[in-house]
Image (cartoon, rainbow, N blue to C red; front, side):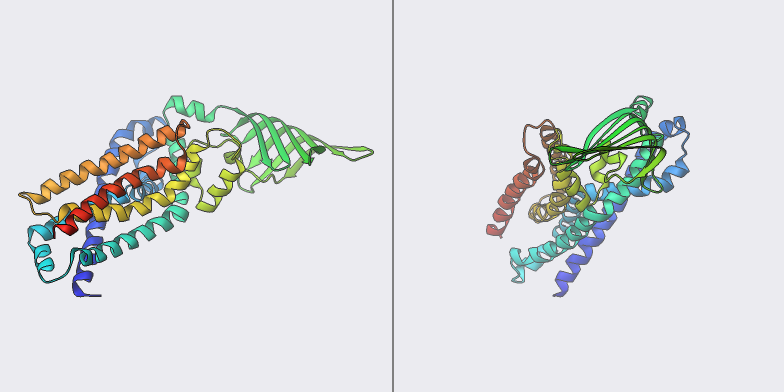
Length: 362
């Protein structure tokens, strides 16, 4: 690796870290000022939020906007090189624009791989912690009542198992009148009923109180009753009553398994959007790196400010574009994979146009 490659990679990554940390600090300050009254209403404190919420919220924010941070970093760093005539000197020394692209791509690949690993495995853990604090301290009264309201469960928990629970409370993890059924093919072979069911989050088991058990055989049925029975159903209350954002709390393998188990249900596009975006978001760092390089290597009067304005406009339009396509996907107008990848495809075409134009004009 040449000295110029190391110079570009080092400055690219340092600029990326500086912009990312600066944006996080600014975002946390703004968010705290807007949520302070809600924290107080829910008996939370800023100190608790800074310890148990914002570190995990920042991980989510960093990963969500990492392509944008990469884009702004490339534009800011490369515009300075262009302003100082360093790009001109590099190109005049016989290094082609395509060769100049290599250290930028290497930097983008490093950031993209790190983002991909975080997206697949570490971000779900952060989201789980973030959401736990959010539901406890940051919900408005209307949404808090909706979240804590008792709900009826009617679900298929495996290929041959079904469960029905009336008035399950997610706040207390208690439900009334539970019925569990197991089939062999189309034949019912087992029924378990209880007056009350309790989910022990600590031990990850269900406890059924005042139960009646029926085992159905070919020639005879067997009945058993008791005060309580412990069961390990292959599903949790969070999966039985999934929150709108439950998909973001699962790693990539858990999310795939969850989607496969729920494939016959309606309104799965929200979860599919999350699944596809785990890969599309890190991939977009490559697109934005090349686009930023193509824009910021042209000399203009006041080029740093001009390029940053163009970069901000393109970056925020990209975010707006993603949100629009996801809304159409959630309403089942377009497939999830198209909704998530379409912004990358369109920006990829725009990037190819700018990059090709920059190459032939070198």
